[in-house]
Image 1: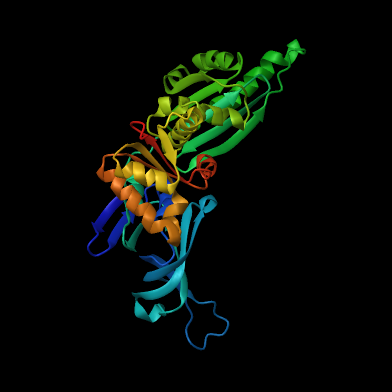
Image 2: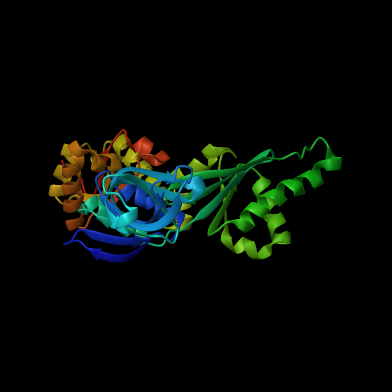
Length: 347
């Protein structure tokens, strides 16, 4: 996401959404009650025109947000609210409801007070997002997933018709199976991870080396216990994706969650959870990593306390991970809500 203009004294932020990832980030940044301004179209119907459906006119409108929808299938963000102002005035009626559609390449002016939570999101959105495609396969099937900032997206499953008990068709069906996977791999952006429980991934590696040898430079071959969706999550939880991709957000969430559970289970005192214990650890400058669920930053009753916690943690140099309550790691992290990995045992 590109920040075109930022003036926190005037509570103004103008952004340009450069990808679908950026539209998703905006769904986390924007909240009901925010004021947004952007270009749109209004249908204008001349007085007395009973049958005329009206003509669409381009307008600039300022809305107080009521509803935020990410229509991923349509590649757009829909922002609905009450019109505060607009131009040309003859086409804009103050007090009416209207929807601004924000697409990739579109710009949006946002007027709101930025809390520590929002600053963390903007920092994350401004960093280069690493994308990856994960293929887990065995002799019978393959599952293909894309790893994005917004989480894991399962995009393709294919069954292999190659049967060893039918040697006449085995080679032909195996090639057809691998050919489908190669198409997915060649069309993918960014890194590629191929994994599985047996020798199928090794056979696929040989197939790629023969058909598209340059592609091998982008592929990391790993091991999983199965070729199902759980095999993809296994790579995330083991930290394998994190190792391959670096600081990809969703992989980082899984790695931190696994580390938290491991430390809690050992009862060594180097991890705490719950607002009171985490706040005490932050005040003692003992926090190595703060972890917090985004729901705490969105709910009115917990927002202020959560933002103060983030602000204090950042001032002590502790990194902050904000878990998305709607992705898989975030849903699992709901059991903790707020937690911290500690530099040292507090007691």
